[in-house]
Image (cartoon, rainbow, N blue to C red):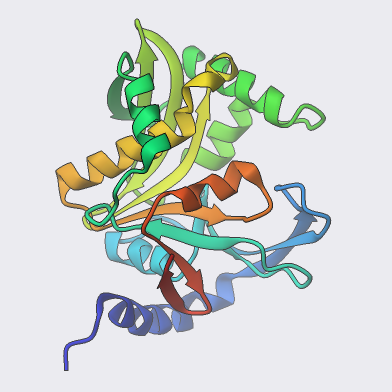
Length: 245
């Protein structure tokens, strides 16, 4: 009997993990999402990975941070739930359609992942609003988080009259796309650019016939993460099973 996609991924990943699990360590930090728990990142640093190996890690719920791959192993909390879309199944709701129309003046450009002063200015403005009390910089995010030698990464830029209003950092494989991070000009909050970005990624996946779009973590109690569940149907990784929501 032919195995399903997820069953085949689980079998291959089990074999892969046996070879690399010794590389992983647990790192404890304050929860980056503001929850009152210690966050435990189960992570390892890698060199270049095959496109299939990255696909298996994503299908198993892992995320990328620079050259590190990780999943969450928090003892007191299980709020972070991996979420993905199957772009061919997705149908926008009324609010998402409004966000699409609201941004009809936005132009997009898919570019190599590199750092410019313009990127740093918008990203820095976004981070200062989101993390006002922390020593977080745009340079640090690009150096330690976005740029990597693990997979093929690009950036999708959003502009209004040639002015940068948002940038999406994405990893791309033959059959998958990984939404790593999205930042935008806080002065453009009225545009619902986070929603618009996901709609654009869905369209890009459809154009390239990519079956799986990974959106990172869904966290019910964190608005910046919970809005992802408004994209339906979606799939949440519960245990080792991707369940339709």
